[in-house]
Image (cartoon, rainbow, N blue to C red; front, side, top):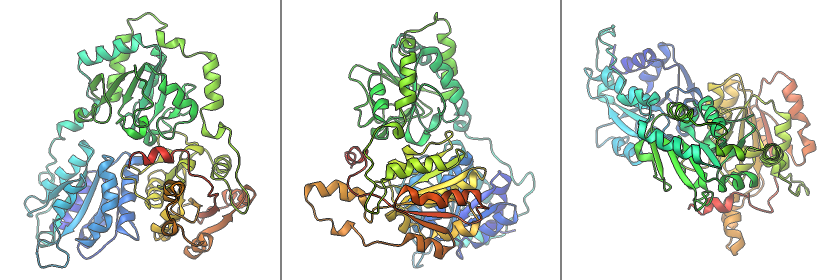
Length: 554
C-alpha cells in the first residue's frame, strides 16, 4: 500500500461515504482509493462545482464533506467554493495533490492559499505520518467545523506504507472542541439570560446555523417565555409550522416580521452571528432592546453587534439550562402578554411574503418573479430542497417558496459569489434523495455553472432547474441604473436557455406567463427520469425589495 491509498482507506474507515472532485494525475490514486474502499465518488465537470457540491452535501447531511483536486490549477479552480465553505464553517476536507518543486508549472504556495481564505492548511510529509495527519485533518474538520486543506505532495503519495491494521490506524481522541457540541453554559451566564427572559415583555429568538439541532429545546423555552421565533436565512424552516414563527430575520424579513422583531425588548441570537444581513445593519434592533447571544465560539459573541449578555455554550444545552432556571417563576411570564390570538391570526395571514399584497407586473412576454415563485410553490411537492444562487432574483425563490424544515433551503451565500447555485442543488440533492431538488438560478449564475448541467443529467437527478432570466446582471442594473450610469456592460442579448437545457439532456420549457407552467405538472406526474429546466423570462422593471439593503454592505 502506498500513502495515497492509505489516505483513502483511512477516510473510509472514519465514516466518509461520499466524495466529490475532478480527477487529474495528482489526485488519481487517492480518489481511486476512496472508491475501492466503498466511498461514492461524484465526478463534477469543474472543480469549482465539485467544491460547492461537497459543501452543500456536508451542510445537508451533517457529515464531513470531502473534495479531491489536482495540484495547482485544480485547487485554484476550486477556491471560490472552498472560500464559501470556510466562511460558513462547513466541515469540509479538501484532498489536494501538491507540487513542492518550485520549477514545476503546478507549483504554488497552497498553504498560503488556504490561509488566505480562512481554511486550515495541513500536509502529509511522510509515510510515517500519513495516517495520523489524515485523521487529524478529518477530526479538525468534524470537531471544529472547519474547512481543512490536506496537501498530499506528489513525492510522498507514492511512498510505501505498511498494511492498515487496528494498531496502525490508531485514531486519536477527538479534540476537546468536538465534545463542546453538547457543552453547557456557565451557571452565572445561564442565570443572567434566564433573568432577562423572565422579565422580558416582548422577547424574540433568532436562530442560526448553530441552532439547527435545537428546535425542540428552543420552542420549549419560547413557549415558557412567550418569545416569538425567527431564523437567519441559512436556518430558514427551523420553526416551520409553529404559530409564532416569523420566518427569516434581516433583509429577507417580511414587513410584519421586521415590525415584530424591531419591537423586541430582548433579542436573543441562538447560534447566529447577528450580522448585518440578519439585523439589517442593526436597524431591526430597537434602541432600548437588550441583546443576548449564545454561541459555542467565544469569538463570535459581539463580533457584529453590541451584546449585553453573552453566553458560551451549545444552543440546545443552553436552552435546556435556561428553561430549568425559569421553571421557578410562576406562569404566565410577562412575554405571554404579546402572544395573543389576534397576533397569531395576523402572523398566519401576513408573515409569508406570498401573502403580502403586490401589483403583478407580468405582461409583454415576461412573468413577474413573485408570481412565478408563488405558482411554483403551489405546484411543487412540499418535500423539497431548494438551492439558490446569488443575484437580484435570489429573494424570490428563497422567500416566496416554502420549505418543510431547516433542511429545505441550502443557501451558499457567505461569500456572495454568483454561480454556485446549480452545484449547491446537486450536493443537497445527493444528501437528501428523498426530496425534490430545486435549483433557482439567475441567468448570470446559470451560465457560470452551466457545465454542471451535464452532471445533473448524468447522475439522473430528478431536479427542477428554474432560471430567472432578466438578460442582465440585475443587481448592478438596479443599483447603478437609477443614478444614470451606463449599463451596457451588465446587459446581454437573449439566450435560449431551454435549448441549452435540451442540449444537455434536460426536458425544458420557456415560461413567459404562469399559464406556461403546465409542463411542470406533466413532468411531476411522469417518471421524472430527466431534469426539468424552466427558462423564465422575468420582468425587469424594478430591483428586488432586499437589494438596496444588500448594497449597503458593499
